[in-house]
Image (cartoon, rainbow, N blue to C red):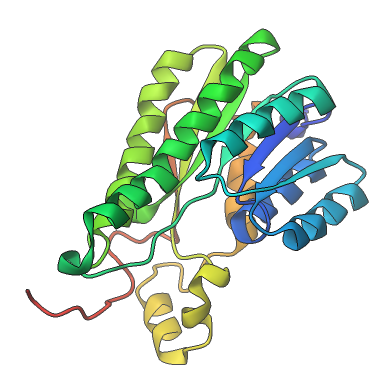
Length: 262
C-alpha cells in the first residue's frame, strides 16, 4: 500500500521549537504516523502540553526545555535522545525567526544573531545527530526555511538572508549526506501562528495578506506539518536537496510593511 510509506512506527524524531506553532504541529504529525519524539523549546509548560498530545496518540515524548541558541543544549538533546530511545532517525530544524527591521536599524549584532538562530543551530543539531543516524538505518533531516529566503521585501535583510542560507545549506548538506540521510527543506509562507499575532488581530493587515495570496487564505500549521511528515517518511525516499514551497502560491511578498525610502 502506498500509504504505508508514510508509516513512522519505530522511528525517533527530534524537533526544535516544538512548544507551539509549526514545531508542535510537526511533533503531532510525526507521532500520529507512529514516531516517538524528542522536543525542545524554551518554555517547559508549552512542551508539556505538546508531550501530552503525543502520548495521547500512543507514542513516547521526551521533553527538554532550553534555548537552542546555546549549542550545548543541542548536544545534550541528542545525547538524551540516544540514551532514552537508542536511535535517531529524523531531525526537524524548526526553531528560528527574526523580526523585520529597517536596514539602517539592523545592527551587525542582530544580523549575526539571526544567522546563528536560523542557520547555525540547524547545522549544529544536524551534525550532532548524523553519526547516530548513519550508525542506524539512515534517516531524514527537514529544515524549516521561509519563502522570504527567495522573495524580496523591505525590512528582511537579516531574516531573509538567514533563511536563504538555510535553504542552500539544505542543498549542500544533501550532497554530503547522500545516499543514507536525506536533507530537504520547507519554504514556509504566511502561516497563522502566534508569530503572526498582529496579523490575526488586525483585519486590514489580514485581508491584505489573504488578497495577495493566490490561494486566498493564510496557511495553517497542519499544512506545514503534513509537508514535514512527507519529507521525513519513506514517501519521499527519492527526494533530497530540495526546498518544498508551501506558501499558498505567492511569488512576491504579501504584506507591504510600508517602510519609507532611505
